[in-house]
Image (cartoon, rainbow, N blue to C red; front, top):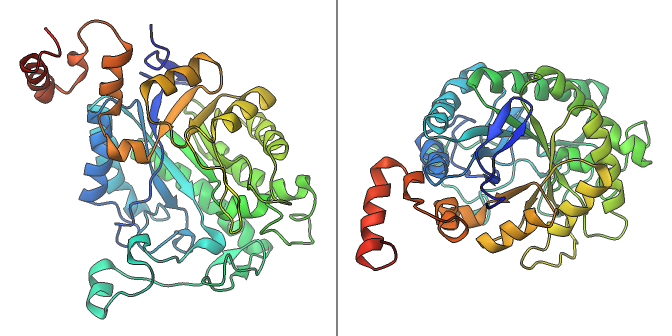
Length: 372
């Protein structure tokens, strides 16, 4: 029996297999509202056999969005279009997740494929262009191309923390099964954790205990607002890949604290700050998931250039992680789990396809002599 296709349960939610979709920004929302693009983008992964589909980094405040095209969940009016997506995922056999995010000093960024803020006046109207002042732990810009953010004071910290918790309540109303706290990739919570971005001299800066303080305050507030029978994940940059930045050992300590607060899975990624020296290659982040899994005694999700069924199966069988998260590979092949079943399972797997497609794919494969 393939471990990749063995169900796993976290709290009251059972995932039908161990392959999930990691959050992927689409930069296609208007004023934070989901639309048909998000429905089709996320819905196709349910049709492709993924057990959990996690929606992109979703801003808990307007100024917390990575870009003006990112999703938001700071307003009750944003619930209904997300619920439409959740309902489609559920109807087609997948659990629905959403990642809560605040970009901090990396907010108000341009749409990646544009290469900069080059929207015409007409495009600004069409795309619902917005611009705002970002906030961060310290008044230090991310890079020279970003503006200097405003350092959060105590009132700002409390207001932002409460926004995370309010988003959790809205996500529950929308019917999401899983939430994921974005504490990675150089965004706000990662900015507090990392000495690269956190230059504060108060109780939120300096020592690891102080740098963890605000992320853990947010994590505690979100977990309290989220139903006890629903699991909560956290995405963590396990290392900055920068001398003087966050280390694996510090992230293990952070993961232990998150586990104590009731978090169920650490989604292990890395990096997020300028100057990182990243050893990019196949499976390059899997050792990070293994280190956290063993060091903090908490389930982990491995992500990052995992491309084949054999790789995914080995990661699980060898105890390096508990879940396999795909992002770009899922974009390239939305039917990845269905294709992996052919490799890893015996017998007829065509019944796992949507009924509208399974019989046709079987007939195609029969015509090619690939199956009986």
